[in-house]
Length: 544
Image 1 (tube, rainbow, N blue to C red):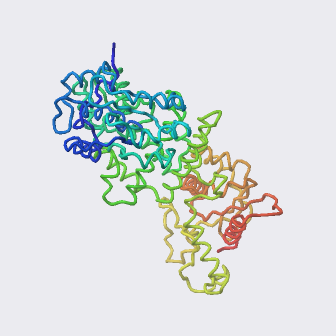
Image 2 (spheres, rainbow, N blue to C red):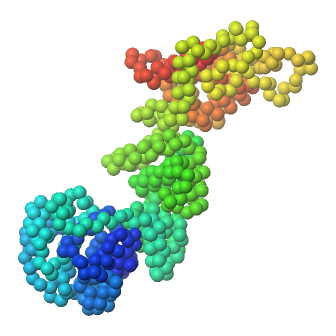
Image 3 (cartoon, rainbow, N blue to C red):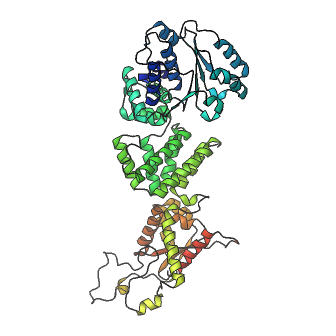
């Protein structure tokens, strides 16, 4: 009968246990010196070696020929404990034997001397599942057991144990196994099983296992079922995750604000049977790596990946602001909670993608992270204007005075652009620059339908927002009038603003400053953010 890898390759002695040297060295030292405690408590997350070390310890204390604190695994006692023929080592599942009567039976049985071994060893797994009455019944026996009895308690939730139990045991804390230790063990097992496992694939399994060796071996077992050549793609398919290629595609779309491509990628992965929960977890870990690469100079020890992948992570981190990365992590963490109770998990992830690519769509924030710096700068300008420290000359004064550098409230293209190169220069003597420029008459902008036609070609989502809008020219600016309150946030994203400016330039033949005027009826109560937005628009419309 086929035996699972985590059972087949369970360590036989302390030297085979990976990632817990602080535990194995102490236990070996106690066994060599003969200072064996009557009660041990092993605690730690799943798959870190608690039960394995308990079984090795039960063999070591009874072994006829121990070697440096390790069992020999060759004597009749070691072989009997391994195959279960010696009944002096009893393993109890506290989840199903958690009553007072079960502990009373254990106490009565503990009084009998061992039949074959030196010690009668009780391994109580998931001991936190015992009832309060069962704990109380165990206290006296646990404190002063017969000389031939050793208790080994194992738990993943140490906080659920009474302090009276903790004080009666020697406690050993099992840490999460380091990814490099898991990778080394996986490479060893695959070599013994005659399977070709690439180092990158082993590293990916270690990352997914999250410090649990049993989880890593179980995933490797699934990969073995797919063939004898295991690479990163095979691991991604077996685990039902997106894989690094898709993760980098996601972060690229987030950096560009291209939620259309991001949504298409989600649909593709969902149609390929990618687990939405796993995808959300992988995205969270990917942005965590970007956060570490963004803030730590030497991050090699903090990110588990190959050298090539680390270079890609650093490159992508350079394309994103830290505030953007942190915002994405918060959105994904909240989405992971929402997915658990959602009727449709895909919709929850799609909503998260929209928030990451266009955070202004988030009802909680109401403003794009990308606009924070810009709004802060505008607030400073408005404060300076209101205090009289900065004065902006009116258009009439500008025409009468000598040309001076224009005071700009934000880095927008200058309103006076040169004639395109294809227009031949006039042969007349030099004249002021203003006479060489294309001028657009004030009032209603008659060419606005032509601009919309070009936007329809360049940017369909933007056209959908602006389809019912109109435009006029005021103080040399192109003012867009729309009843859609989201237009301002929408065109402020880098991608859409470029396409809008491109369409206006092709129709008019010059670059123009662009502003937005919301024609929606004012509400009775507005938030501070809406007031700030209104001030910004009024400031732009009045030639600020």
